[in-house]
Length: 543
Image (tube, rainbow, N blue to C red; front, side, top):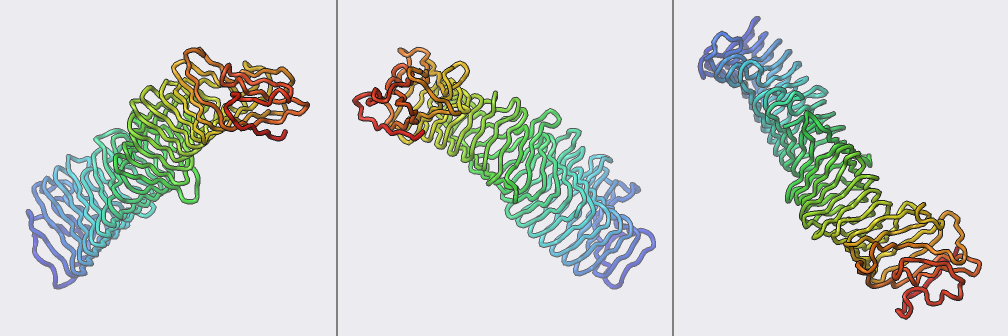
């Protein structure tokens, strides 16, 4: 068909209907029924042909086999469905092959309803496919492969693939954008190729929603959040990226893929909320996460930095139930700016956290350090909640303890080499369960040169552990100073709470900030126990 309007009667064909006269269009306002419809050059017979078929004003086309929009040619084929027009297909729809373009445009309440799949772009040449769904229009199919080109789903439009799959850019590059209420429904989503390629993008703008059963973002590709929402059972970043501002509901896992580490990126002024309804854990493995002044909010979920994971902070905020730094080569590097962790933080054995480059780190909840926390000169860490664990605290930078300090794993000996401030709100807890320091029978701190230690009138709490009963004359070297003459120790404790030992014995802590020792003495000898003459308050705990 060369072109013109077909508005007076239904058109029925046993074979195929073809629209291919250079840039001339055919339009239908009454039903069309055919075995197939080709627009442009659907079969390679006229590579220079282009054409368009428009279904408008309630018109419908029912095709038993395939819609082809310029599948072989070098120019353009357009299938346009709008104004409550409807295209029904018993087979597939393919648009864009050869070196030209195929366009599927569904607007203003139009409907494309297929029993087959949609293919945009092709391996045959450099052709591309273009998809536009707008104005509460809808496209329904069983699955889709968008190889090369772009797509826009906006204005309440819907791309509904049911339980089927959608691949963006498998070997090519395809950018799909959802915006202003646009919606994607699909069983499985793959963004980018597992075999490399130039990368593809799924973008979710304001009020857009992507509902996925499961998804995977491959190396070089990304999901860009710009105010939209993803709802999924599971999304895997296999070398790809999730970035921007929006809401993610589901399980998010980040893995190395094709030699490229997956990452979550939240830049300045952005906020990405990650939540899994009804669950407490969102596991993120091998996470290459960069937070540049933004907010990553996991709600009640846990962030697991696993295997060779790397969390890079440049002045942003992490919120969640818990942050676990537990992978074999996992690391947290806070490189600049003011970084905040509003979650319990666990740094596992042999793992590290580094605060460097003048960065600050505020840990608002409890911290368990079983590995290494390094605060370099010019950087500062503040622990608001309880700080505990058998890990070391080194680097020569500054550290402030506003909450309680519980050294060890009941008990342990740790190394501290930072400028430490123990605030008046802090309680320093010491547990004693034996007499052998090398066996870590009691809590101990090795204060190293390069640090300073300022006690600003907090509480000292000394208690026994594991049923241990000290004897008269037992001495416990709690604080060991690497070089006492070179390590400034200032201030003292404003309150002392001691375990009652029984048998007329008591702990003498008067030398704790002098030579680092606590000694068991007869109770009458412990009248002035800590820094005599300073007016410090002594309280006793019942055994």
